[in-house]
Structures are given as C-alpha cells and as structure tokens.
Length: 254
View 1 (tube, helix red, strand yellow):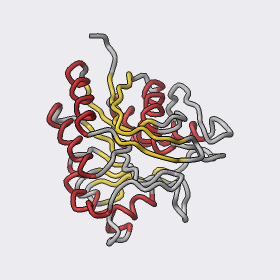
View 2 (cartoon, rainbow, N blue to C red):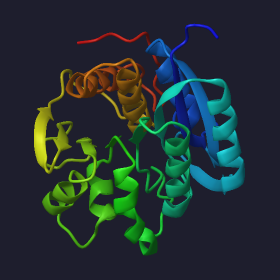
View 3 (cartoon, rainbow, N blue to C red):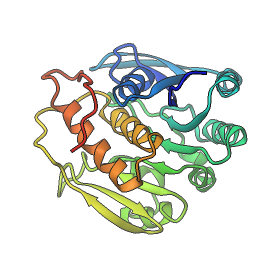
View 4 (cartoon, one colour):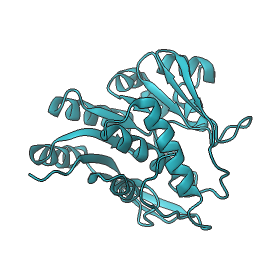
C-alpha cells in the first residue's frame, strides 16, 4: 500500500461536476488527499436546472462501502445527498461498524438549489440517533430551520449541539451574510466571519465547504482551524470564476 491519505465521499453524482461526488473529489485532491467515492444517486441536472433523481439501492451503497474499507484505511468520511433518514442511518451504522472511531462530516442536503425536495418530515424521529453518529454536521440557515420545525433556530442549535458539533453556514443569513458559527456542547464556540468579499454565488458551494472541512480534519488539523481553513477555501472557490461553476486550486491556508 502506498502513502496516500484516503478520504471517502458518500454522495450523489452531478453531471455538471459542480456538486456531489465529483466536486468532493476535486476538493479532496487539492488538499493533497486521495478521494474515494460511493454513489448514492444519479441526478439529471446542470448548474441551473434539476430535473430528476434516481436513487441507488441501499444494498449497492453498502456493498460499495464494504469493498473500499476492505482495501483502504479510511478515517474520515463526508456524506452528502442520501435518499432518506432511514437510509442515512444504515450507512452511518455500517461505516462505524467498519471503523468505530471514524469521523463523519454530514452535509444534510434537504433541497436542491432548483427546488427539488429530498427528505420526508415523517422521519424526523430518527434524527437524534443520526446526530450521535456524526462528528460534525454542516447545515445552512434554511436547513437548520427544517430539521426540527417545532423549535426556533436557537433551540434547534442547542439541541443539535448536545449530540454533535455543528458548523452553521451563514450564506443564507439575513443579518450577517457569510458569517458562520461553530457550535459544540450546546454553545456557540466561535464565530467565523468572511475573510474576503465574495463576488458571486456558486453551484455546489455547500458541498465544497463540507468536503474542505472533511479534508482538513482528515489531515489531522484541529477543529477550529479546520473550520477556518474550510471557510477560506470556499471563499476562494466562490471567487474563482464568474459563472455558477467554480474552479479548484491548490489549497492555501489563510
């Protein structure tokens, strides 16, 4: 076996390459890691339009996971688009059975940018069990309000961070756009303000941030610094091109 540091993405395939497993692999590679991937869905989309999603069966997903863990030492996993909360729970249990101390970075994707909804609100009772199996989750402000709709944002954050760490992305904030927060043990640990002015939005920027955070953690960087590095990398990605599809460059740390 060579000296690669391996990292795994479990997510959907986006033909445009802007989001999902393709985007994750680009992010991993620019951080100097070797990206492995498990496909959970085949989507029909580009950077502007989402038409259809075909879900991969859970048996095939688990088989993909098993064969990769047989061959590679994987200590960090980023999870993106998954069909449902029950499917996600099965995936989490599988990877923890294969490597108990593994770090899972979950980007809880609830809706495509074109308006396609994914998860059912009828399955919310599974969420606390899911949070316990994640090292950190990376919702945005719209997603955080949907996860526990009977709670306000403050109560939801307090509840979530009693089970896992929460990196709350601030791109949808009305008051301080672009200001992110890290929550742990029911309190806000640190504010993460923008470091540069962002000139345009990008398709898949949420995937990029969570993949960059996973890469930093996979490289052994401490949580707070990993969050700041991921934020800075995502800002560089957002400013990389004038279109909705950004480009990835070699990782630079602020």
